[in-house]
Length: 137
Length: 317
Image (cartoon, rainbow over all chains, first blue to last red; front, top):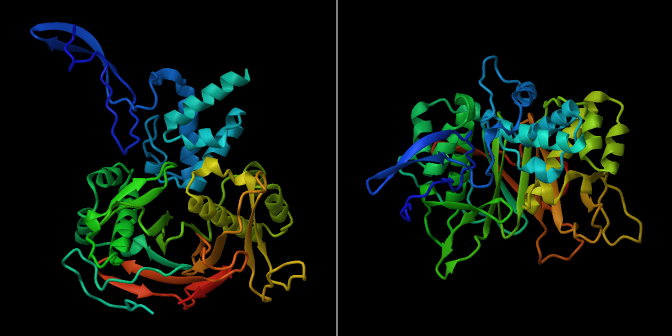
């Protein structure tokens, strides 16, 4: 049995920062009193969501990136991907609302204010879109 | 009257910003702002970086690109140095020592200890940024919300489609009635800033007061009939907020000011009315506006053509 300080799943949440990373499933070997066993560790998962990042299709993420780039008039070659935080790209509250509206129109969905407030990254938006599209069908 | 810091060039080596200012009185808002383009000195920006908490530094560095990093740095610097100017309980405040927390809804607040342990700070602040101007409003014993937008801000979506999706019915009607598209765009931006300022003053997050559920109306000044208690002087457009989904929600305890700032921006301020004044009576917001380069220079611009009131009762000093 693992000692109390070693746990199979370790979740690190950074207080004060909504840092959301794509979780990577890496085999990690934990040694416990000389015995080693394989376990999977989730790296740096945001505490608020325990979900695997491949929830949204790449095409959805790509489309969200396009809409974001257009709204924020980002320079050619600015890297935008699932991890990108809207605020880190320079989106203010009006930009965010415009982006949500653009997403609603592009995907034929309707986003509640509460859900819109929780969107921090492109990935968040893509996941929410797929959830709403699924509900629609 | 408290002493203004007039145009003064003194490079402060220490991190205390002096002279200290008296706290704002009731119904006073002090608005401080920076213009990012005026900050070119790398050594000055590095000095500012030293004021930030580790978490704030990390956040600044997570911004994509130098311009955004500079803006994020200036925003935190503005908040810290502005608050530090106000001596609270005769203590000189080091901007680095200030601690911030979020209220239960996520609104940033000042955390501070009084002699009796922790209690809410009498000083309230709210910040707003655009790429070209970052502002921080400060009040005492009154919740405050501010929003700044560039006058020229272009909306990517169709304005009326956007308004129908997010604004209230009356607001859509008001915007639809404007035939000139440029005037319509300007009115949209003004309305947005007022709505944002209100929601930020409430401090309960966007979803607690969805934009659709309240109406902001700029009423042209006119003499009211005898059925109303208050009588407006002609010429002072009044800003009124009404809640459409919860008519019983108190809305007449909030007061607004809308003005043009340095000819390039619209600025909206929303604050709680002074609780000691008669309910329903409108007392002007006393507004003081200062442009700053922290540790280098401050300039009071109230009462100049850099601050042009558009709506709400504003008295500049």
